[in-house]
Length: 571
Image (cartoon, rainbow, N blue to C red; front, side, top):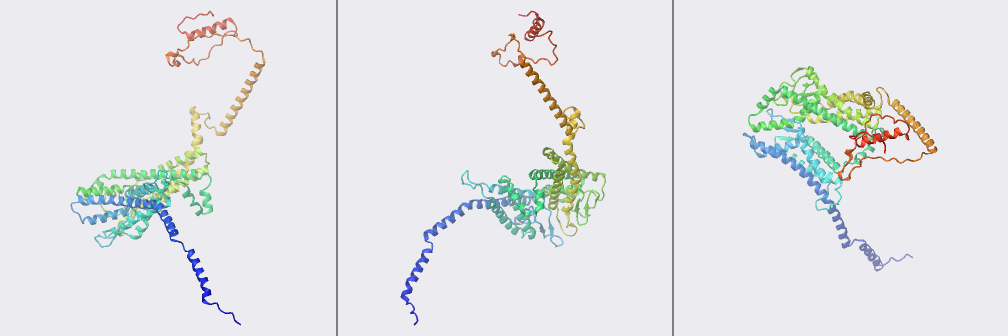
């Protein structure tokens, strides 16, 4: 007999209880409000830092764009024959701002109708956006306005993200606006160069605001292979890398300064051609002002070109036309420009051109002096000193290679597709020069600081070592002197003990007559003079004899009353 199925009324209580349990699990309206308020509180606590960072990035981009816009509008207003209206001037300003970031432009209004690339970035203009982003990121780390004085700074990741996002937002709008003008940005270059400069400058600003900590750099160490990590992060790592970086920066500065000096000398030597090209380009003062501004902004580029010329590879003035110290072959149809007038004439190099090799030699000597000074202070062996010098040479080569890449680029099509030095040739030649000059000079200066200076000072009579005497000999001689001194002190202490065991003589009262200083006269130190350093004569007889006693009184009377007559009678 089968079981009877439960009726519907018997199942209703179970459904009601299940519904009640589900309703009890559903959050109430008050709990929803509390969770929402907590979420809004978190957003409100974090939003001032992010909002301030976005504002700082957008403000940095706006200040850069505004600077270029003011300059372009001033030149457009002062031009007697403007080619376009204010809209064209603003398009040019946006394009120049993008060019200052390293973005390659495309010039469409050519005579042949073929667009010509413009890829030479003025390095002086590059400093403006980099400094603005750096300053904005550094200020974005500070606590937001209205916060307490003890409020913590904005998180590094938040500040960096906000500054970069705000800057790229304005930069993207500027690139879209400039794409409708005659100078249009090439989008692959804009996508790479604009975020790269913003990210690097913002990272430097945030890192500086936090006190330049080492942890972000050390966190990258696990990404390196084990052998490379052990070699880079071995003993005395901070001192070695710090010394190598300072020496590399000093060598780069010397190369850059030497290139600037070569440029100035060449401009003076070709003064007539430089002046003629400057006057030939334009006639109005506004046009000449624009040409002068362009020349000044390209001076760092020309200095890098001159530095590459000094180390050997030189630079290209057109495809297949190289200018080096050994031979000069500029392109025959160069546009008239004052800086291009300083290029050496066509033909083989002479001894005057070969003197440019003094620049890398000076850079190597400067680098070696810094490395040798640190090696002498920390007592580095010769191998470590040579390794630090080689590391500094490698870093200097990389820095000059990066500068050479930024300083060159295309200026057109056909023969004008290559202008400036080749980055890999400049970096390799610089590294080779500094390795050949800097490493031996660092080892020689280290040896000179350790032995040569002391030996030379001893030869002049200002040191304890003698000329040609090593440190081991000096140390042995000092130990021998110390042993002699200790033996002499032992003998003196023995004689003192023997005299202590002997019966002491009866004490005698000795009265010394002299002039005491008067407190009312102030400082009486000037009333006493030091005794002469000449040896005194031994007193005749023993201490208790009459002659010795009279001699003592005579000496005391002469010292206290030098103008009085000598009296040999005692009291």
